[in-house]
Image 1 (tube, rainbow, N blue to C red):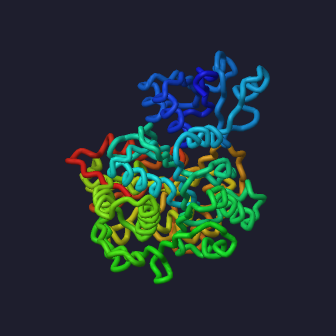
Image 2: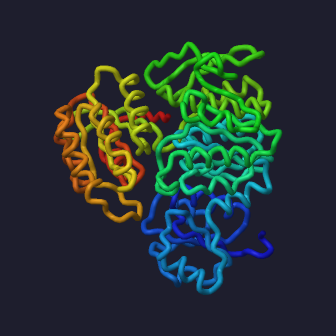
Image 3: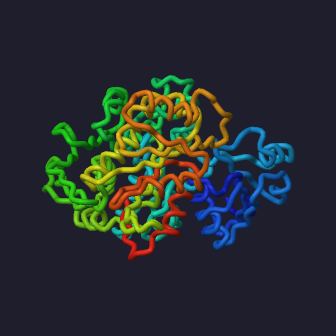
Length: 471
């Protein structure tokens, strides 16, 4: 590819799926440039590696580019996309670029509605700990190294497989996994959940006929598709029908310990530095992949026991002090779907029993808020205080019946909670500081700009010795 392509332009280069591919291409020696609407930690890192980045979308940005990479989040009226097509610069979807990278490696692809990033990170960590030097492209940053992507010299490429736009059907891995299947991104699938499930079946059948897929059978939708899969299946879960299962699960603080039982193999214990049953299931999927790759059990144990986590996945700041002297702890999390919120709330309550829980939540996309409105209402009432930010549109048009004010009003009518609506991050911080009590747990959740709120809190109030843990 390098002989014909010199300059690769990314539209929306700071996106979680785009920045990782850009970093791998930079490491391979390509000239990389791109655009985004604001500077982020991802764009800062890419600039440090040599990327040229424009902080606006303009047709002049693509001058000199040999190829233009776009994600499904880019609208058809984007001026760079229009200009690239006008001057006949090849426009390549992000997933096709990832597929091109995977073509030169043995691909390990992790799909699923929830848990992809954590599971992919666990797999990458296991392979790296086993001296297999993998290439990886992850939707978040591994906390221990601050990277979401890395070019390794080994034979494996580990990546998330994105179902949101059907792009995972471009990948051809040699091993795959599906963590779960849930009602999300249904706008792409004509609001037909059956079509989404069929897409996962088609993804699995991208595997060679002899390759295995690892499936978490705790998910009822995965159990439904099993009869339609014609590839070898490794079942992981909590029941005895699983090929690899977890038992004797115990959570103490932020650590979850359990025993792994595998048919025809000796049991072994894991001490996972992440809370929550959902992370036990994520780790089982990672163990299933590692076992298929014939990685030694001791290396699996060591890697999981020492896992440092992923940024914004239950990222924990223990000792925070507000201006009024109130001490609190902060959990920053990317979760934005009701299922993810429920799992994180359960993990918080198990980790910090008898402590007041304040949730600052920013809904992500009007369409998701509309489609899962009642699910959001049911899960968001399960906290002591709820601060709701405006919906992060992610490029969508406003849907008046699915904004945060309507969501707050509906929750209030349930008479279980009186949420506080906030117009901005600064206002949300002011509201939070006015409500804080000693030993509160502050949970910040969302996939949009709300991550900046956590950064502000940490920069202003993390005045004591910092202890950071992730899940």
